[in-house]
Image 1 (spheres, each protein chain N blue to C red):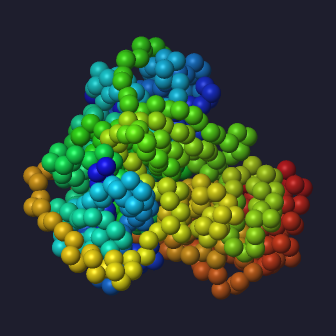
Image 2: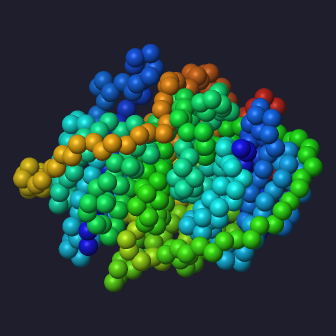
Length: 248
Length: 316
């Protein structure tokens, strides 16, 4: 079984979000980058299939050279090889189009994209990719087992979950629940050493367009100071919620 | 060229988020001086759409489309929307719509924009404001395409009633093969979901254990609210992942968010940023949550919450 895990290079969840060049660009100054958490849940499940069923796991990112650190981390976690498409991601459609080229060269039984990246929150790469390469896509995937080329998938729905059955190949949007937080693999020294020997292939960008572009970023208005109510007087809080905030 | 809104319903009842999408799309159709067209699956009672300005609804009926399945739904919508020459398509930000959106847009050769929080600031090119960095920032995005699918963030526009003369037309579904088969559905009945809730009551580690969750549930019950929790609580297995609110969990965009015993890690705050009014109950006056809340009580949840429940019962 061949598995492709698409990885986004995103600012750490605790990062301060700032912009530069007249608010047209994200300011990465002092920002620590990590594997997009939703992608890491997917990668962890892929490594499980590697250990159990001998699957070959390739990680892929679309980005410049600065993304290689997280690809090396994916290799240290256990991925067999890494591919970087040397292009600055412009929008979800652009990224999906780039990834689709790799999927045309190699045939994958399972393609994993995170539910969404925690930077631009587009939640669209997996879905768009699925129509380009004509695979089915299962978003918000919280369970996946594969037997004889047949996948049983769980998808989170509002207020519950559903179970889907599909033949491979398939694309999933991974998120927490597919594996637990405690299942995440912290690379050990051996993994880190091995990662240095593994292939990290760099492929020049394919000629594709983006459909959308960002004009300007902005930040939410600073909040007013909190109104504190004495713990002995909850009725004052109820009164404020009813008559001032008007939400009750 | 037309303005289309996709209506989601459950048991023949139109979702509130869809009425918000209708209100939003109506404003767009007015700006463009076009009719507002709605599309739905297996709906029989359209009457409420008369109060929100829908001019025409096309309803696709088929017992095969009883349950949402992304391939057959997107193929049917693609077929209909192509005939209607869709220009702007508005969908909600429910999990099903966010699943459908990019696939439908891709089939329509349209641009897709998620997390939309404003009306278009321009129609040529189409430009909207969207939230990003899990609600820590916004970006104004434009598209080069003339057709666009917009997923409206829930509770970002509100409802706007306006009378119309609704016409309806039944559409035959098209045959669509999909290798995805929905095997079973598991839904919590009689419980408000986080996505649909006006009020969300959320608990953190301060509650000390799952055995104390009746406090959260009782408070939610008296408010008709959904229940949620912080990341550590779901990681420790006190509550299911589906209740985890924050950057790697669910976003909450309710009118009122009440956090009990949650300190307010930056990832949690990001997830609830688009809620309108935030109330914090925490015994630690230094908890970071107080900095981003509207109202707060510094006190012991085990004393404050029961009093709050009593007080709310008295006014209901």
